[in-house]
Image (tube, rainbow, N blue to C red; front, side, top):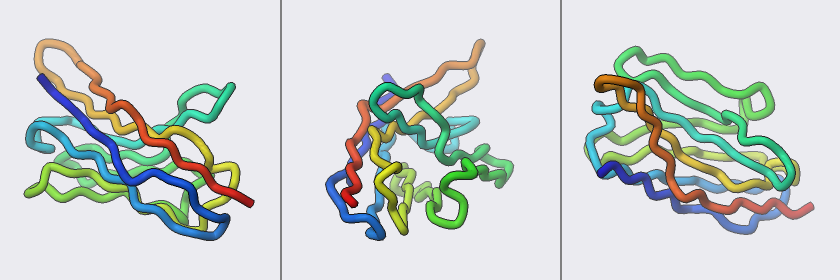
Length: 119
């Protein structure tokens, strides 16, 4: 059973910072890709940042470039999202996702963590 558990969300003022964590129940190297997504009320879930495991490829949504950084600690099986210069429009539930390839591609999601940015 693959589990992803997010933490670190909360209420912060505009311009502030938060660091989200995604604790994974198995080795990060088991995933072909991992990423952070977010979903604001009434909107579709969207990619924030992600990486291709083993390839060193990282990508960011245009609306977070220069402000957010995705990183990982392989020893701790944890993926992070450092969020700086937060804006009210960053308010959303943030989800961690991992993709494993066995016979097919399987996506695993965490339960999400709420981030609220006040103006």
